[in-house]
Amino acid sequence: QVQLVESGGGLVQAGGSLRLSCAASGSISSINVMDWYRQAPGKQRELVASSTKYGDFVKGRFTISRDNAKNTVYLQMNNLKPEDTAVYYCNVQLTNLYGIEGDYWGQGTQVTVSS
Image 1 (tube, helix red, strand yellow):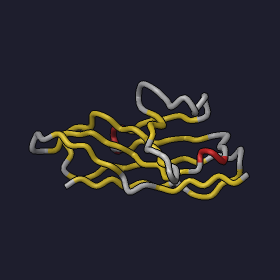
Image 2 (image 1 turned 120 degrees about the vertical axis):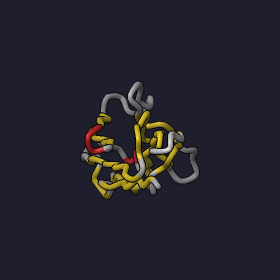
Image 3 (image 1 turned 180 degrees about the vertical axis):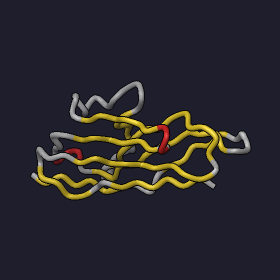
């Protein structure tokens, strides 16, 4: 059993900052990928940040980081804009204790940026 718990979303004014966290726990042998996605109403889910790239809309405002000892990935978001309003999801690809690879999604955390 694997659990992902996200936290850190909320309401912020344009220009403000938020830090999202996603902690993975359970029967984990190794974690291969920890990424962030988002989905705005009426739009497709899109990549926000991975270990190798950021969405074009990020433009240096967001930073992804990872604490391997805690199986946790963070997303520091600065200079937020109203168009960043979305539900943010972490995506984790891991190998469990039985050697089985799996792809897991967090429950999502709402980020709302007011103008």
